[in-house]
Length: 239
Image (cartoon, rainbow, N blue to C red; front, side, top):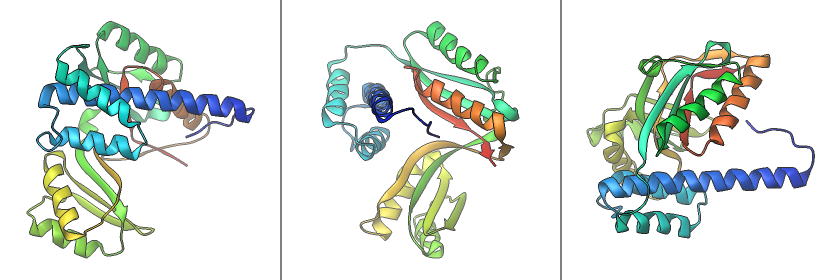
């Protein structure tokens, strides 16, 4: 969902800004996770997942270390999770997950993004029931039956598995994340996950096009540049 930029200089500056935002989001999430569950990734599965994903997204080691050091020291900001739900362009559904130390500021920032991009915030629970909270794994492969068998042998509750264009996608309940990942790594040594995360996946898709598709891209870009926004989920499918 990128934009066309006028020149390379502007593009590079924008990319640098986005990288800084990504680093900041990971740093904040790692800090909160480590502060609540401990700084040892072997004992804190959620933290291990965050650190693995941060490394995959090329977050510098010092950003991860600083977040862990701050959590270990016990000082720092007191961030709380906040979720906002609403309806995007073309009637699609949107979930925005945040970590904030100032809920009033965060709400105002998120609402501004929605109102400027043909979207409307809803009440808590307005759309979340139309998404499944899942563990999501995507990796290269060609034998979905072997993957399914490995997961079933490990007593993993598989919600869905799909093979498309040489990539296998596995969905399990979010509570099965650790067990599913361990089973896949044990059954397929050297496996490399393209996606390895806890996500909200829509139960149905909403087709949008034209101005609605552009408005959604603008909405997501605006939300991603909000300091307190961590993740954005939606059910839109551009045609």
